Length: 263
Image (cartoon, rainbow, N blue to C red):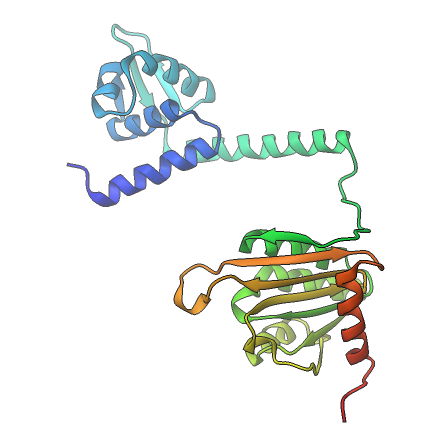
């Protein structure tokens, strides 16, 4: 009898295999063979999830991909290769697909979006917001103003900030918690801390980033992250010297960076 944990693992494996390009029946056939090790079409069907009429078609496709071997007996038998080999083959397939996609996109048009934008754009989801922050930091040439909370500061962000300092970019940290300040300044001693009108960690905000006084991004936490396992984050961003979001934030933080502290 299959345990609950095994059932959950199978459901997850089926989803991931389909994410990587296998059809539902191909993924189920492969999973069934993992349970069997070696089996016929009837054996695969008896486990469930694959009609007898679709087993041979699915097996042929898995054979083409190198995931199973076929013994041409009567009836035919199928044997699955090792887990390690399947993972390696899938990794190569994914890398080749990404490389081919990059080449196609390079032929279609420029790889960088137009930076001068007269409105603000919305980014939804923590991973998407994080990727946008990494992109803007990587593109900075002169100055970065950065505010965030500890739970949103990733190692990738710190690596990008380190790379920025190495190419001569000034980094200014504002209104952040002691934990964030220590993490960044331990890795990037050159980063400078300056005072703001508010403490960022005491707001529902997530991150704020201004690069080269031309790009600005502000994110907020959708839900109270202290009561949920996942942090839901959404952000708005704008780019260009005349962009409204950039103009407002640039005027606030340029004033602070210039040392005009309130009396």
